[in-house]
Length: 313
Image (tube, rainbow, N blue to C red; front, top):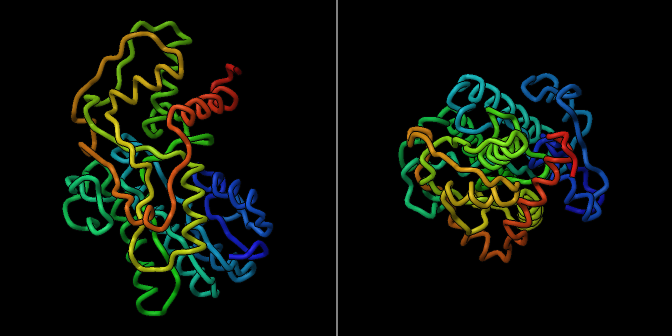
C-alpha cells in the first residue's frame, strides 16, 4: 500500500472509519475515497457496484456496519442482521469483481462464542453458542468472515479479517439508549453530575469483565496489518488489559467528576460474563497498543464535552 494508492474507507464517519482516515492522512496517504450514506447507500447493490466500477479502489477497509450496545442489539435484531449482511456482501463482492488488490473486513470480539475459553483465541470462532443478546449481529459478521475466507480459497482474493475488542475514543456514539458501554456510562455520569443526582443506576451487576482499546490504537493496527498481513486466519486486536464493569464505572466517574453513589442492576443485562482477547498473534508480528487507558478516557470525555454535551470545557 503506497502513499499514492487509491484507498476506500467504508464507514469513514464512524468511530473506526474516522480514526482510520486520520491515521492514513497522518502517514501521507493522499488518495482516500470517502462517501457519506447520502452519497452512497451501502445496502444498495446497484449503487455499490457503480461506485466500485467508477472509482476502482486498490485497497478497501470495510469499517461500515450497523452497530450498537446490548440494548440496541437485543431490541432491533432484524435490522442488525439485514443491514450488516447487505453492507458487507455488497462491498466485498464489488471489491473482488473490480480488481481491488486487498480488502480488510472488521469483525468484532462480541461474535465469539458466549462461553469461549478466556482470553479468546482466534480459533474459538464457531466453537460454541453465541451470546443471545447480539446473535443476529454476530451471525452477519461471521458470514462476512467466511465470505472473505471463501473468496481467498476459491479465487485467491487477498481478503483479511480482524477482530477488534471493545473500542472507545473521540467520535463515538453517545446515544442515551443505544450506545456502547463507555460512551453510555460517560454520558449518564456526566448528566448525573450536571443534575446533581445523588445516585446513578447502571445496567447489569457490574461483575462482567471487558477489555477496551482506544480507537486510534486500532487504526494503527489496521494500517499495520493491511501493509504486512495476508492470510485466511483471523487476527485479534486488543489491549491485553481486562477490568470489571464496576471498575470501569469507577474510572469513568473519576474522569467525569461524579461523586455520587452507583447502584448496579440485574445480571440479566450483563451480556457475556467475561470477554478478553488473546493478542499473541498480532503481538508476535511486532504490534502493541500505545495509549494509556485513563489518558484515552480523558481525551474521550473532552471530545464529548466539545461535541455532544454542549457544556464546553
